[in-house]
Image 1 (spheres, one colour):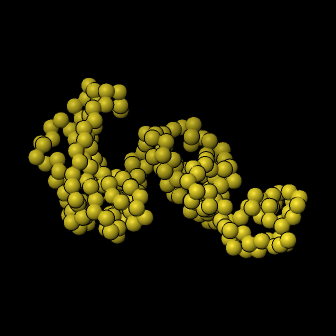
Image 2 (tube, helix red, strand yellow):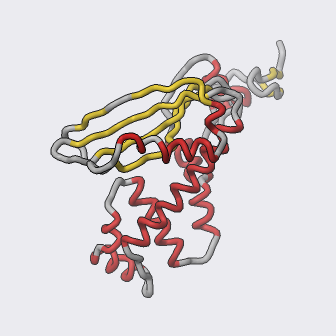
Image 3 (cartoon, helix red, strand yellow):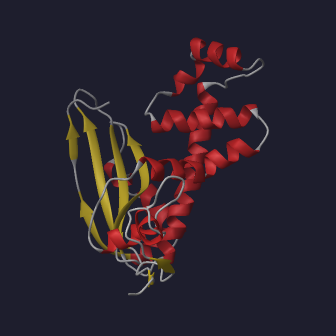
Length: 229
């Protein structure tokens, strides 16, 4: 009988054994202090299985994140702390005034003396800079793909309010044949706004980035949200 077998996932030879702790089985399934074959995950995905992420995979992604690596490798900076708090406000959908919360300021000062939290105005301005930066990256990504894009117009209104929001998004097929939708721009519309000027800011964004040349068709949607803020 053969003593060594080649792994079909990574093509490396491993020893066969009768017990469950044999080299080949441990390589396939992993063990205490030893990870499974590197090609195991891709083999599972290729076979069509859609399994939830394991705790180990989630922790590995956290360690690889750019923000985590940055925070763990640089000296403390009060401005960077406030920028991280702005990201937290955006992800948690919290108002800018939370940055001026007295208890939050006391908590940070208790953890480290001398920490100063900036104003809500600074937070809103910093968030706008982040938005513009991300918008430029999205435009650059859309220009680099081979696919045409479908432009989606979306309108949100609120019950009891005369204000509304209008946004545009782009739908496209990536180079890996994956259907994607990404946000492009959002505009606040007051009740005094004239309808003929609604599309001008969006058109300027598309023309400035030469993205209008990749548009294949338009999709118009309308949402009337009764209980949204």
